[in-house]
Image (cartoon, rainbow, N blue to C red; front, side):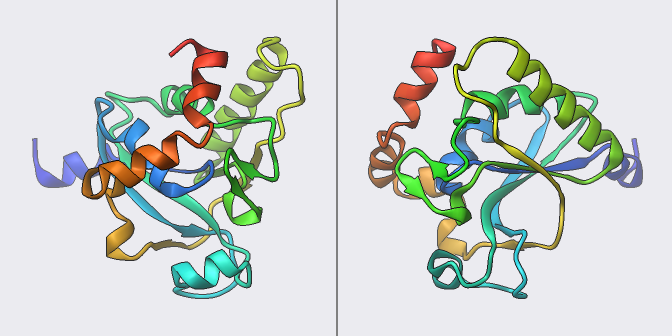
Length: 180
């Protein structure tokens, strides 16, 4: 198969669910996932820095951009994984990470992704798995700015600090609601 044909099989998904450090690892080793990049999206400032985003002045959300092969890992399957690593009932942040820059959002890249995300959210809402309403937003993707180098693959670079971040409630939430 040619390089051109391979590139045609790739797609991207952009998910926000708290600190981007904690959103990389769950997707990084899935079959068909080529890369998971930490970054910022949804704001009004070009090329924001981590400090600007954390200060809340840019309206960006920390997110991950996942490049994947939909023949191996369909977008709908990525959505299933997404729901299992976020708290879809908390619009004010995720676990110990609070504020708009940590809000849960699915950023769609196409009408098909929008429809799949809405259907997936509705199925979760109707499943009875949560007592509270599902508040994860579904928004059109906008410019995605890669985070600084030191934020990429953080769980590999600083496993001890990453484990402290994971212990901030996410791990227990996942066990409680998904049994993992």
